[in-house]
Image 1 (cartoon, rainbow over the protein chains, first blue to last red):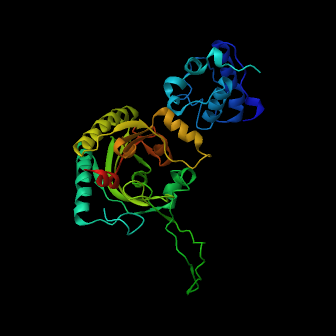
Image 2 (tube, helix red, strand yellow):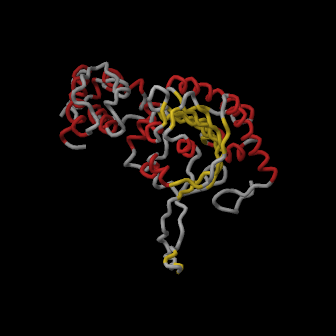
Image 3 (cartoon, rainbow over the protein chains, first blue to last red):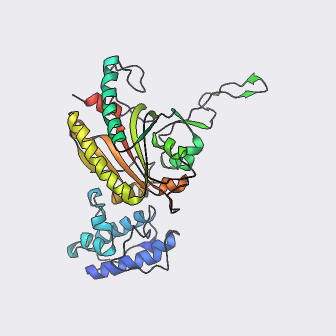
Length: 102
Length: 254
């Protein structure tokens, strides 16, 4: 993963969500041309049904979550219940005690 | 099963074949009960069909070519070149359902279509074991083509039907989310997406460490787009295939 899509280190879940949205709008869209830069994304926007995240983008999305939380994402949690929206990702994976500080 | 010859798949006695036929007949009956038309497809499949389905990109490590070892030029037989087979336009079918998409290509389906076929399939597995992982094996597939809502309803029905056959055969299993053995790491994202969207469910038998006896594979509009198969409103048809590994069922059935 290039430096340009390294995740921000969020101190709160809301900050994590904001950083993730910025990551999707910016580096991930730039990296994968199939994304839709004009699309408005918020914490409740479905990421997969809309095609915002495709089979290329999911690799970077997982890398973002793993780097930001400092923990690998177990395969059993690769599930729409935890990945369907930015809000779900934040609730599933961000934990205050696991947040990395630079 | 009669092990040892050939190594690609076990040779079968009449009794063993009867077991396989009995299981196949049960699955075939299920298919017919939901309106399936039966087809028989060849073991060879045009490479162009698989390329259209993007199979060589996703599974180059599994695809087997029906190659020749020498070209005929000007009436002379060329010299075989060991280790350098001449590719032809034909491959050995890695699955049954690709034949169905080719069969229905460039069509508008006025109503949902269900096709079932039993066929020999070939995959270049690195290791093989009878009844578990074979180079050559038989699959019964049920291929469904229609609108998304109908596919969704059919998937649930298929789950229950496979469970019924499993129970009747003494092979009760569990459904697990799975992904295809894509050629990694290039297709790692595809595998993750399959898992995330639960497009592939495997009916796994705990008696053999979670061996997959059957799978339900939802493809969305992918094959409809690739093969130009549409619903009456012009949208690409959605597809799903239910694959039953007959060798595995026959090998492990009590």
